[in-house]
Amino acid sequence: MTTLPAPAFAALPARDRFVDLVRLVAVALVVLQHWLMPVLRLDGDVLHTGNAFAAAWVWPVTWVGQVVPLLFFAGGAAAAMSLRATDVAAWVSRRLHRLTVPVLALAAVWLPLTPALTAFGLPAQPVHTAGRYVGALLWFLALYAVVTVSAPALVRLAARARGGEVAAAVVGAVLVDVARFTGAIPEEFAYVNALLVWGAVHQVGVHYAAGRLWWLRGTWALAVAAGGFAVVAGAVLLGPYPASMIGLPGAEISPMGPPAAVLLPLAAGQLGLASALRPAALRWADHPTVGRLVDRLSGVVMTVYLWHTPALVVVAGTCLLGLGIGTPPPFSGTWYLGLPLWLAALGLVLAAAVRLLGRVERRPAAPARPHPARLAVAALLVPAGLLGLTVGGFAPGPPLGAGSPWVATLAVAAGVTLLADRPTIDRWLHLRSSTGPARRPVPSTHRAAAPTAAGTGE
Image 1: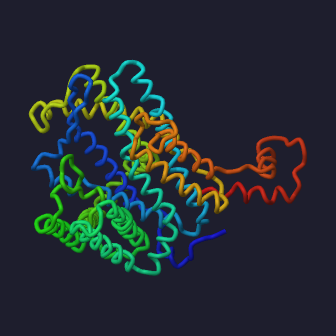
Image 2: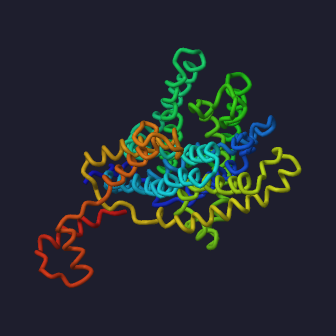
Image 3: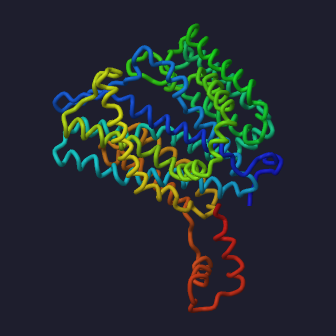
């Protein structure tokens, strides 16, 4: 069994409620923003889309609302805590399994649904647009799967480098941006910043879990927040970066595609602000009712992320195709008057989806410690399949083509299959003996081996 060295985990707690809160707040902001952004109009059978956040005055909201840094910070901290004294291969297997199985549930609904809706007479262009949109946000999971596979090595690196790896990633991201904006490299090459930028933030979470950010509180936390946001402001005023920290239609430069180095001081500002609020947040979470709610929501956070866009598609499709109602002018009086009903409808649909499908995320993760070769192939198939769904979504394509959602889903499913346990006769005999009378006695060597094979789950 391969485990991480004890010194890397000496200071790690078993769990940090603050990390749970950061993750939940970040996902809640993702959901809220995606529900507020769409500006939709149906012209005959053609759907026209816009983004309400393109309004000139909304950019300050994106400095707090662009919460991808918080998600990677929470992911790094959670990985470092849960990796302590555990079998690395089994940990990676469990994490990948839990990450991807809910995606298969999403695919099981949307792969047949898209062609079925057009077969029933709904216009193809809006339906295909919806299918692509549902898959577009899987980019985060594709990258997160890569980070998950790399997490054991990243945690060991943090223990040795003590922040040096964060500084190196920051310098690398800045150099990539310089090369990108001076034309020294094609923009496609700048996507290496997806690893440098988000990897740096992930490592900050690892260092937080190890107790190395003990000083980030009170006045120091506020100073880091102010400094981070000040650097963002300077980069926007003096450099090529846009004021909005999200990608907007028609913008010449997107800070997210590829990720730009300006997101690093943004991460510092957000983490400083969150750390300053940490004592108050933990006091609030100590209330028994709040604590139970945090624990419950933490168990379905992936389901919420995956199904908030289908909820948007269902409600928007009902309004546009069923009722003939488009989006009022953003931030107009009519828009504000209809907002409570809009959010309530979306919330009800999402709540129903979580109620029905949350159990998929909560199901026990893969108990196996797969053979290294199987784990390596799964670690390639899962991100590749998720990336394929990100690019093409669930819009119909050639059944066996490179952009086919069926091929992408098959890659994810194959990866999950490779992660699954492979029962042996020893394990079968052990299960039979533990659930009922066995027809044949189990040899003592089998009884000794079976608990080890079955007991590697987290």
